[in-house]
Image 1 (cartoon, rainbow, N blue to C red):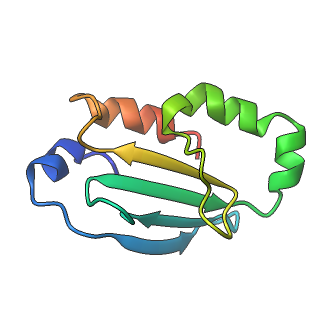
Image 2: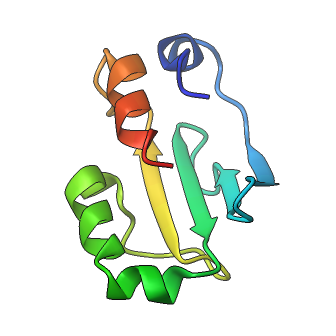
Length: 102
């Protein structure tokens, strides 16, 4: 999904609003609600409360730092904000490694 981030950044960004579910029934919402160059990736994880008890939020804070949004989208447990204008130029590897946890 983020392998061609530099190409996306150089093109004319468009609006995005996509909901999808993975094989673990985690519901994702990928959107550009405020600016076309800021991706919001929100996740609804059915067992979120149990995961938090075992330190999941601390791990997400450690791995994603400033990408972890302080405001979570309604009906979702956690949100990441990815500002394409602020991302490093070698984001292909950087974001792929950071998002590989999902």
